[in-house]
Image 1 (cartoon, rainbow, N blue to C red):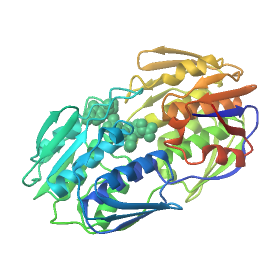
Image 2 (image 1 turned 180 degrees about the vertical axis):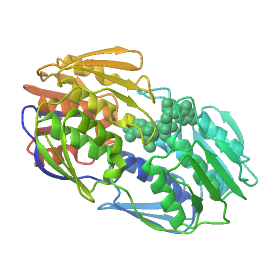
Image 3 (image 1 turned 30 degrees about the vertical axis):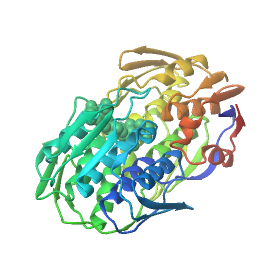
Image 4 (image 1 turned 30 degrees about the horizontal axis):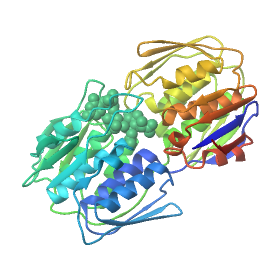
Length: 420
Ligand code: EPZ
């Protein structure tokens, strides 16, 4: 396994171009199962998760290709309706092939995703939605087995105990595109990635209104055609670089950004004292003066994104004063706390809250990545820590960040990959 070695203390300066959104490409690739016609998707990030989803599509009977950010998907002869455990266990997002398979083939057998370090990750809302559309669902030996003679539109309340569900909304919306009649999804997720998925489905001929709002209406159609689409930029990668600029007291122009996808993040970074300049497709983040501590609560979009919680914690760990970070989406998403504390941070966990007492400096140390965004928080901490930080298990990082060390090197960071 590889590890990352980071030497702290360099102010990052320059320009970086954000890649396509991981959490947009994954459901959009699943949506290609809704048609037998070829699809072409541009701006695809070359990530481990993208490759995993392409492997799943291939196992389900698609011919797929990825070359310089362009994904091609075409049907081939054999159709398979089984999404195997070996794929779904490595990437939870694979579960969103359930809706398209059920809608197109009238049957699906998809492995239940395991939990992961950030939480139990149930799929009860996905199953509730499929049942509401008329599927017969059973769970057999760790697989969800779904069958239907024909999906039928319905009014579905999809809110869970932690609010809306992004991939459950995606799964149900995709299934509903080929259901008979009208489907209303209430308490739908409003994330930009849902809007991007709906935009792709509409290009395929789906009839969808309200994507991006809590009420999405879908009028089922008989079939969908192939389509071309360009993926939206990755707002979480953009947010990660915004914090990289501040934590190193640097100045970074972040390009290929839709700043209206980052409202809560920009608001909180301006509150702490960042200088932020926005244009149509870029954001410049500059460290002007000492930052102030802030309190953050993660919420469904447009609230502060849980996927930025760990990165913000790194920044607050060296911001003088007390910051309180409350995690409302995944109350256990604090694996990065212990690792940051090993670097000299003073963070105390109290249930879904982390009390962060800013320290003057962090010290480089050997640390271990545990999940995608925790890994990013450790890289950010390593960029500012005195001395050298080595981050092991960086396969977590490579799931969601395309060429991160290369992008950081171009900004002046002393960071390189080493064989473990
Ligand atoms: C998506 O996961 C993202 N992944 C996650 O990003 C992100 O953290 C999450 O949304 C929340 O924004 C992708 O889009 C591939 P949820 P998803 O269903 O859809 C509970 C990253 O770092 N829930 O919106 O799986 C769930 O436990 C990843 O890029 C149920 O209770 O998340 C959580 O508490 C990590 N029942 C809350 O809802 C369900 O059936 C939100 O989860 C489904 C979810």
